[in-house]
Every structure is written in structure tokens, then in C-alpha cells.
Image (cartoon, rainbow, N blue to C red):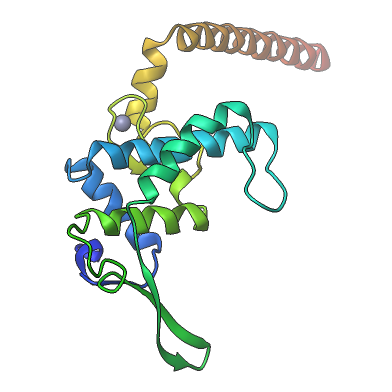
Length: 202
Ligand SMILES: [Zn+2]
């Protein structure tokens, strides 16, 4: 699983959870070029726009005017990727399908080194897994979020970010206020119960 992205140097059989984790490792090792990092961010941006303003029905349509720019960059970046579909052999559950590189780049003078990263990103986006490949808002490391709105790679990062942010301070003050009030209510209730019991005993 460790070297998954390099496993098949000439064919691509589709991405899965393991590819997402391998991509994250490469991102954290600085093995992913800036244009690919930008591609991931652009796809995230359009995902968020779709989520906020409703998904288009049917064919690909510009979701919103502000989705135009990221879409333009996404299309430009993906146009570097050329794959030829291959049907390798039949199985009980249908054919083993893959994508071949060689034929697609026949006659081309240059094969992009990062073609597998591009292919993995396309697949992960289609599977709904790319949205969970996220950069931590605090330490900037990439991680696989359990949910796609997770901003932090760890409790540590979330806590230290909360402490630093003013919103966090306000939230903590409100929490402390509620906490003190609840202590006071509990205290009052205890006193009331004690008084009631004393009353019974008399
Ligand atoms: Zn972090």
C-alpha cells in the first residue's frame, strides 16, 4: 500500500481509500507539485460552492459565476492527462477495466511525471473521497478527515487554534459562565434538598 501510486507505472486501475492515504503521504513529503496542490484546492472550492448553492442537475454547468475560475484551472490541469481505456479480461462481476498510458501518449514527446496523481485525484473526486483529503488549518499538514468539514488534523491542533482565536476566547468565556451558573444551580438545589430533608426529620 505504501508505494501504491507507483505500483503500476503504465496502467491505472482506479483509486480507493489506500490511494487517498498514499496521496496524503506524498503531499506531506512535499512530493506533490504546486499545480496539483492548487488542483485539489480548486476542486474543494467548487465542492463548497456546490454544497452552498445547490448541485447542478444533469450535465456539467457552471454552478455559480464564482465557480468559473476554479473550473477553468481544473480543466486546464486535467487536460495534461491522457489515458486510453483498456478492457483486460472478463471476470464474474464484469470486465477488469483499466487506463493505459502508453497508447495515449504515443507520439508525444513528454509524459507528465505526475500523471498518476492526476488520475488518483479525478477518481477520488468522483468517489467523494477527495473532500476528505484536507490540509490542517493550524499546522498545514494534510490529513484524511473523518468528515469533510473537519479543519484540524488532531485534537491538539483544534484546541490550540481555538485557544488562539478570539472566537475561541468568547466561546470559552460563555462556557465558563454557563459552567459557573450550573455549579450555582446545583449548589442551590443541594441546599434546597438539605433544607427539605431537615424539615422532614423535625
Ligand atoms: Zn494540524
